[in-house]
Length: 289
Image 1 (cartoon, helix red, strand yellow):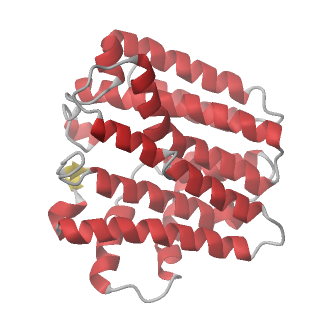
Image 2 (cartoon, helix red, strand yellow):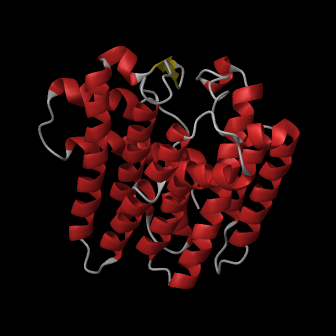
């Protein structure tokens, strides 16, 4: 297996090239899209896709378009999340948010552009495959990012703001707003490597627990984190339905550890060496320990 740094380098070297492969994008739109897409970050989702594919015997280089498409969808969601009509944030990854630099209209179009570019790239890559793996991976991407996935969670997050937190409601928001886009890379990576349905089912369970852990961690850091280290403002979720609002910081820490444990236990049921994925999973816990 490669190291995390090697996977990130592979992703960063290909993101802009994949975008440019689509043809002539209006200059201002391309600039706004690249401003957020190339701003760095952990690249966790495309990294997970490449690592899952290689864990199951596939080749990372062959599935790079799908990894880049996934990161474009993640980036579009962040641009739109930061807009005044959503989270109204002015700092992302240590820099002004997209709409603060380019204005709301172009920021919306940059997000729209990244979403559509992602699907075009994934579908073009699918057309070059001899079987249906690419189309199945593209379908999984659209499903997890769509109206029964990430957007469903975002909708409840926005419309239920200010409501009393309940375990069912907070779990639903976290499972879709965040976990869906962490289920997607593992499911897609295994599909592209030719894995069967039993392994794909395990991938979805793993991604669910990893996603809940990741969002619980984010909720904790919004209360306890340092904006200078996080690269974004804290204290932004006071009115939102967070795990901290539901369980308090100590209870959230306990639940974070439990979801990490369940994610790792699920990996142990897969028929491959999953030590690299386990390492990535445990790293999430260490950030708030």
